[in-house]
Length: 269
Image 1 (cartoon, rainbow, N blue to C red):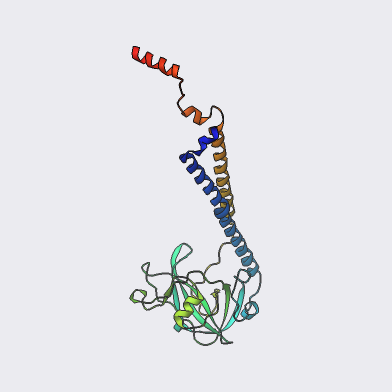
Image 2: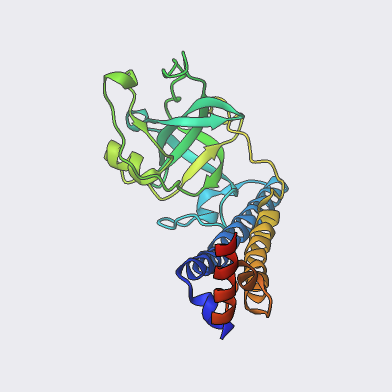
């Protein structure tokens, strides 16, 4: 039976690779890109909504102890309190508008006694690696306008040594990491200062509201997986049909009489 031809180790390995690739496209790669597209759409919606609305008190959006999420990120809020520069940290290895940058993170004590993390904006490195001098946070009570942000996932601990010019540095903007290093109970999430707020340096720009290529990438992965399966089906059909590719590649089996006649002809020549 010609189906037995498909049980060769080489053919089985090829079929396994194609099926595994298609399954990966359908269950991992395409959903991953669809998820990124949904995140981008949620960000665009939140930015558009917050741009058209006036800032509201922080506790009206985030009651004490509540962590920000996708429904509250980018909301414009107001808060009153005082900076605590002793707990300040510098976020390293950042990129702002295509160029290297540091971001300055300073704890802030609210009037109700809670502590939050404020991103005061960015500064450009000196010589590509060193933290430059920058304006200290103002002292005394101040009123800020900022946007709520969700903590970044990088939880590597803060560090400070001879290479950091005396600045505590972190790899990601994460309130828990900064709070642990400063020994302060910072609330989850952080607040990104708007231009004009006391203590702001160079205000971080907002993300561009564009759809991005994620949806088309997801469709491409689906197409690649379908092409792999269709190609496997096509070549399988070619292998098993009468006179197929396997039959063409295998040498024709001679009868005993044909083999003797061929041997005799060879002897004569």
